[in-house]
Image: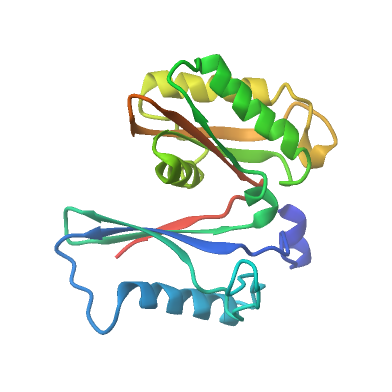
Length: 226
């Protein structure tokens, strides 16, 4: 990142797929068009006017670049209040492609979950441009678990989970991942991950879903409240 700043070049050529977490106050009234159209118009302007690489294709199989990095992936929650909170995370796919989900049964142990996270990092190797940031989602169902993992990547790396059990689990995961000797850019060393962030949610009595969303060393995101 220092080299990119000093040489005035991008830190990475992959400017990601725009992921937006929106918390919309139930007293907010959006006028003049649809909310999703407004978000996508912002992505359109940001990528074209900012000369960012447009990486989104219109169809997953037939392909065809959309030319402006739209549409964004939008996660919207209705919350109390009269504010609109937006967190934007342009997610590159070198790291996204290394992400995994596993539908454990309730008999799985904490050690099984840690092993799954470590296995994910080991398989990823240098592909996600380590040192990585790991977002881990535990609970919910198949899609909720994955969304939790993505949301976890947007938490500051210095902020631990508010539940002491999960805060300790974050610490244990980070320690064991950093013993894998993957290291920065895969060249070996004790800094394979910068942090592990866990977000958890209630789940079904028959399930224990776990998702790992891998973020590269820049893991870009920003938030604003309107």
